Image (cartoon, rainbow, N blue to C red; front, side):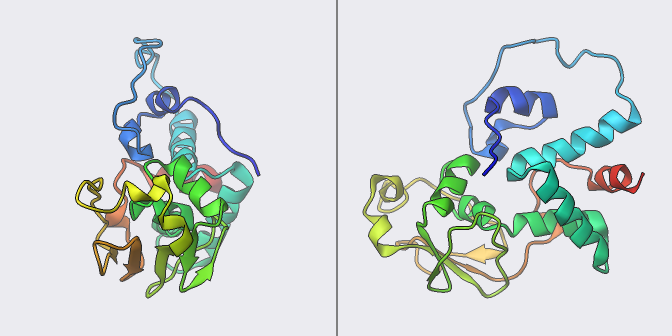
Length: 201
């Protein structure tokens, strides 16, 4: 399974992203402080940057990302928005959004190691797409580990859930998907129409 192991802060700076999008609130880099003072980007470079940004945030490789795009293109609606909301439905992203992991990379690992249940069944595929009405929770036998204990109790790390999911009981590592995510729920800057233009060439 291919993974992007580039330094988070360095990659975020290059893509114009805040490390907080990836779950790293304190990461910064002092490398190449004048890196943003380069000549004006070409149209192609701007489009490519938007694609690379989305791929990096959701942790997908080119072949898989292109498959998501082709699937979005076949559906009725705005292709760019469908692409983003489909990626937002990935189980590793849901794990991160639900607060079951501190970072997106950790969320992918949580899913891959089989710590989650979807509708009561174990799922260890990060790209699994959740649906409206689904329940996602941490397995009982996993909740006793230090990894998950930090999210429970009076000293639990505060997590702000997106509008499309809710936690029925604050003392449980369990969320219910109220509805599918929408374009307005994407909380990082991206111009998805540039990605569509790139693939349309």
